[in-house]
Length: 331
Image (cartoon, rainbow, N blue to C red; front, side):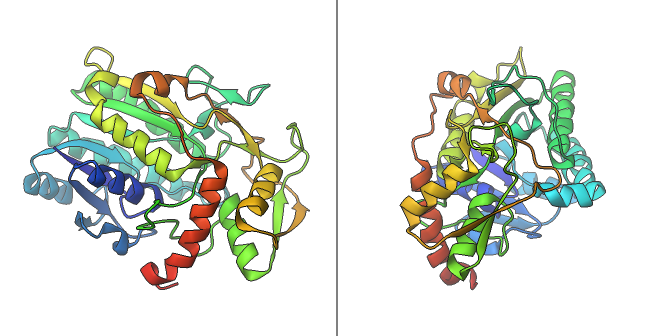
């Protein structure tokens, strides 16, 4: 059985591809390379193009009739950008996914894993969320994830397509063999900005210090990208068990089960990467929320998966990738 990964030349998708290949599962990657890197497709069958291109999807399935699972990682993901340019997010993340689903159903795809987000959840008093927590996304990006989930749930009830939606926050780190890592030159997420500021001698801004958290800074569930990749792999391996035919739409949280504030991430950065990061306080950004952390109990039970790597592991691997990135990507 082969695995088709949309967005497989990006940070998360490429790491999932490596985990699948390490487990003996051949991978086919579809990516338009708008943010992904062709270097990350090495060793996999690769198609350049758009997920909404029906002729291309038909060709992929004709070339690879043994594709048994599709993992959908292709999406635009930057929250402030989604606030300033919402239509592009609805077009790319929602409309094109609808087109993709049409093409997959036509090609008799029956297993679909969706890379979703814990940002779909409503705020809770203790910041902990489980799969039963109501959805109340606070940015256009998060709303695109919720919309796609609703579409997938309806589609799974109407067609022979079973769906596993995996909700998670804030991947950090890199492939542990440094085959791939964060490819964006100017990242906007907290650890990426810390790395750039630390390397360049700039000041890192803690955006928002008046949130109702234990130290006023935003709280997130920072999970190592390799742990995420292994969870996707378990989803492939145990798909039929996790998503039975009589209940064809399932949701699982992926997380460490522990919330970490931005100030705590700064402290962990100092422990793992060494001194030198200068820090200042700054106002909240558009689309920011206080945050939450995911209860991963259901994924532990149903996939036999739990996060094994620490935040310090993620920081060390991200630093190692920063040193390796120029050799792989040229910058």
